[in-house]
Image (cartoon, rainbow, N blue to C red):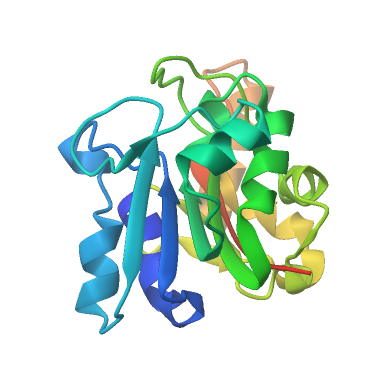
Length: 219
């Protein structure tokens, strides 16, 4: 379930994309969540060989593929090809065997190739067909040990609010707290404390929907 900010992040970093591109989870399920990466790359002047894969046939799907199958089966379906760019956007949370899938995905990338990954850190349930996982940047690094994420140099966190992004470079995870909805002005903070002391209604803190967006390169 991609957001506008994820599309902006991809466009900003499109220079890292090569010419032999694999999009995982490419099917056009809903209009507002469809990135149309094929035309985005072409629109940025990329001459590409684009392959869209999904677990189900449909628009923008060139090959139906189960990423949790044996790698021999995956390799056969793709004709033994390897790719210099893999897009894995809003996909991993829907895969039961996410560990096996990530091992297979990494094998599809050529040495030095780029992988664009976007996963939910905080997000509502959205089943396509199921919704199983939430991720931190460390989790993504753990799932892809053979990928160099370059200390998050090209990575970010984004919310669903347009333009609301922050860099994860240097692993400054305390910045995550900026996505807490909390009183911002001194007056709001004092009013909250006063209401709390007087036993009045105090809004609970809540976390804004946020996506972890990471670019890495195969070692």
